[in-house]
Figure 1 (cartoon, helix red, strand yellow):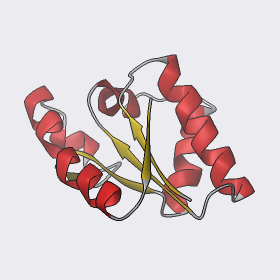
Figure 2 (figure 1 turned 30 degrees about the horizontal axis):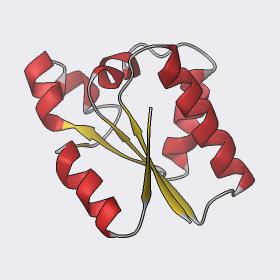
Figure 3 (figure 1 turned 180 degrees about the horizontal axis):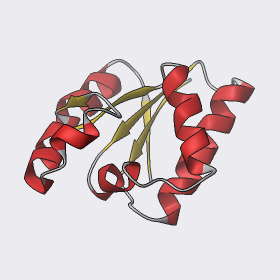
Figure 4 (figure 1 turned 120 degrees about the vertical axis):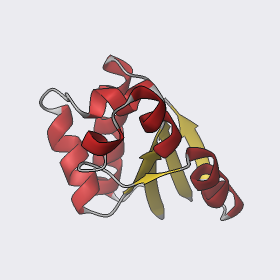
Length: 108
């Protein structure tokens, strides 16, 4: 099974989602795992506490992090800073791409 983690929460739920995603990837629980950030989670990406930062870096270095929403970033004035951390693309298009490719979305 292929899964898509859609992380929207900008609080401790995001930290739990990152930990679950990183551990799932490390344990090879799924055929494939991708992560898309949308909404408040994008702002939290800029100030992640440890160990969430380590989980994010593990996901990013493994190629599991797809993108964060460019439109949300523009609306919040964080586009330039966030683009240094993650690729920015329209979240709706990325989510549709993965769902249409057979990924099961898990929303946090």
